[in-house]
Length: 309
Image 1 (cartoon, rainbow, N blue to C red):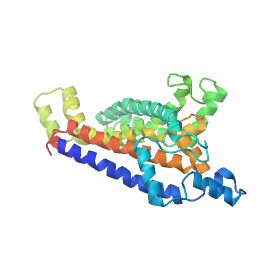
Image 2: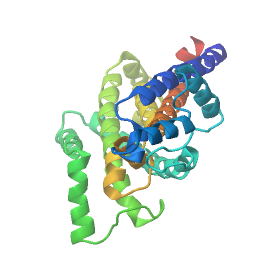
Image 3: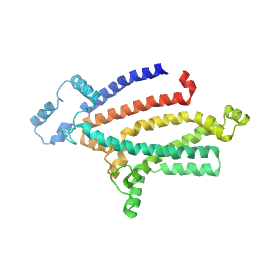
Image 4: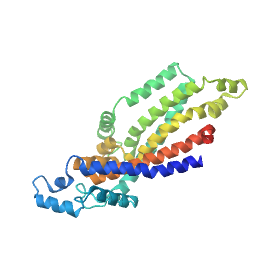
């Protein structure tokens, strides 16, 4: 297991370098000129060339890429070109990243906290009215896209019944209730349906009948045997969702005016601020790489056979 972990850690920088290369190439040669966007469409060509030279964008590609990677390793992603001209991207990401992490992490934990028990109940009472009722509610909850559900909830709980608000006042503020509730619906539905499917399949296995034949209680059979074997796919899902914590929530943050990573990404996209987009892409890639490594470690903990392999 230690050798596997070391191998993964050695591969991670190579993977990030490849992602950085592709992202940098798209940012440099992508559609739209951020310099032209900053100075305006009627700007003087000489002014455009002078600003491009000042920012070092007229140098050879490999020279720019090498300098970008060297600075990115130290946490320096350059400066914003069009959205916040001259402001270091590291400062733009710092506060916004923390906001997005808080919202998405709490939503993920709430989704798992309620979704897994719902899935367990549905599996234990599968093909009964209770099972159908729970699964119908889950499907109904995720049938409405965020850009449809969120305006309805905003109209109801902000306009008609002014209990909540928009913006961001901290995790303990009432303004956090609406985004967290909406974002937790997805993880809740995924965990509930996956837990039901996995657990229902495991409960039909021979080793479960053997455990029951030994006289073990249903609680022991469920917690120590069935649920532990049903957790492997849930760990995979957890890893994917955990890696997405740093990506923010584009629609939710934009509609509710939350100063997070998602909203920054939308603003940077429309402003053609490629340095910010490249920094966000690298940040998301690092998040998923670390999450996948954590998932592998959790696999070994959940299933000793994987640890031996």
